[in-house]
Structures are given as C-alpha cells and as structure tokens.
Length: 124
Image (tube, one colour):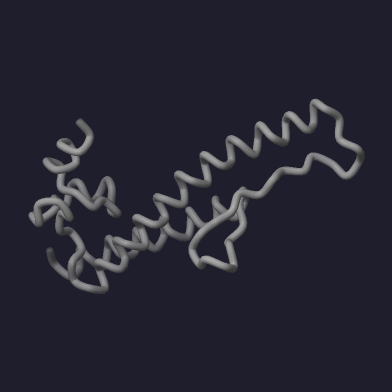
C-alpha cells in the first residue's frame, strides 16, 4: 500500500475517532481510573421528586445507553488499534492470515482487522 493511501486512511480514522468520542460524551463520561474507557451516565429527568414513570424511563434509557456505549467503545478501540498499526507499519494486514486487506474493504471499514475471506469465515 502506498504512503498516500495510508495517510488517507489515517485521516479517515482520526475523523471517525473524533466523531465517536463526541457521541460517547453525550451518553457517557471518560473514566479517570482507566484511560480510554467510558462509563454510561445515568439519566436524570428532573430535580423534583421523580414519579414511578420517570424512574422507569430513566432506567430504560440507561439500559439503552449501556448497549450504545458498549458498541461505540468497541468501535473506538478498533480505530485506535488501526491507528497504532499505521504507526508500526502494519496497517492493512489481516490479523488472521497475514495477507493484505483490499483497498475496497479498507474504504468501507478502515478499522477492519481481517481480510474479506477471514471475516467471512469468522462470521459463520
């Protein structure tokens, strides 16, 4: 892969990283203890004494945000790993078989760890 292509993917990954962090900040806060990990915020629908309905709504929203936060956090981790691979000169190589990942696949999923063949095998 040419350096020009790698720079394009690096820029795309950096943009995706910023967007994910922005989305995470809306529903979670960054943990001070473990850098890079997020903790879902518990919603508070008001300062007054909450009704049972409000409490149920808060718990329901919190549950939904936990799932969203988890997915975003995993995607963010994949992006950080891809950026680290760029630094080490290993970007675009399948972690399963060691072959080169196609440019087409990287254009769709720049943080992918696997070539199409290995990804298909893992999803069966």
